[in-house]
Image (cartoon, rainbow, N blue to C red; front, side, top):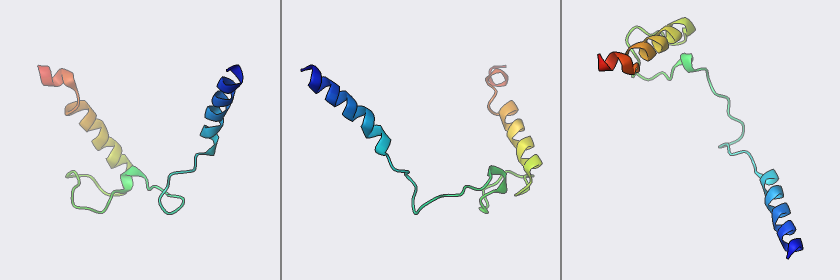
Length: 73
């Protein structure tokens, strides 16, 4: 009984070592978030590819529309 439990535990531990990467068609290189998607659904005033503009819009969204304190007042 003890050997069986040890064998099951060893199999469970070793089964995690065999997982393959889950990418479609090989390695995937992501673009930076501020580079945009090229689609027309962007915030007004944001310039595609401008990191400073992206960060300022992200900060404004976090301060205004996602701040629960301002919603309750």
